Image (cartoon, rainbow, N blue to C red; front, top):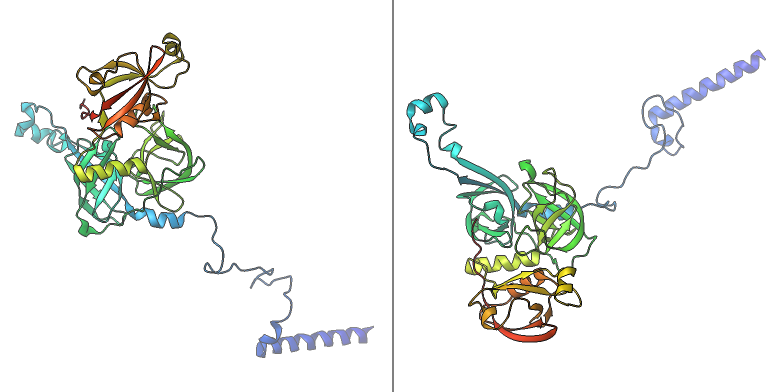
Length: 389
């Protein structure tokens, strides 16, 4: 037994010595051996499969490419407004200002604002919301890389809440690509870009949760894209883009009871924004059709009172004397059912259809009067500018 044990010990010693020599002088001979399921603390315990390089591996779901295309075209907008009222004589007294400082002086009589904008052309035009720049006497634009420029107001359209700014084209900011809002579907990916709360440029993701939102009391002309992509104060005027980074809307408003995002945001469709922008750039103002009537939604009670079969159409509640509607024979109590052959669903649709017509154009209006359908030709007038409150 002792001899057997001695033989075993000598064999193990020789094997360890051989292994040591091979590992030292010819380690490549051991590379083909299977791994040992134990470790002395150096190397891997188990065999693992390393990931392929980024060039070889398929990409995971990401909007990084869309961000790369769209982010450089979204800018921050800073405004300041002179809110000086009648100054008390004490404010000009040097003794008073010596003790109380300048917090009652000129700097305290200015108010600052913050929003976002979208560079829409290499010529330096920037699209934003009217409420972002309304009343401002100084407008500054800051690009994503920190460059700042003084911007000039080209024109604004309060009724759609859009405005166009311009900076010198030699600054060469990246312009965004335009997408199509007409082909949007509920469920499509929507990415909102802006400067919420002034923290810096931010992109949030969501989906298009509804289309054609109106009757919200936000603008005169409403046809909003609704999205659950987080939109917060400071996002106004920023871009709503699709999964490819193309512009589909201008972020405008949120529904909120707290001041923060509750998952219901509204954006102006790019089709409307583009039309308004082109008119502002070309003419400085937006021209819309007008006939001079006051309209009212048709409720089931009104439909019953006027003996109407349904609530489709717009009830003419009043006609302005001398207006195009008055001279063409439209009367209070008429129900407008078609404009230029297009059906009028409600008062908002009627407003949009008439606004799209060119002043001076003669257009057929189909009406329902005392249970009978009548038609009249109306020469469209120019919509007056809204009154400032």
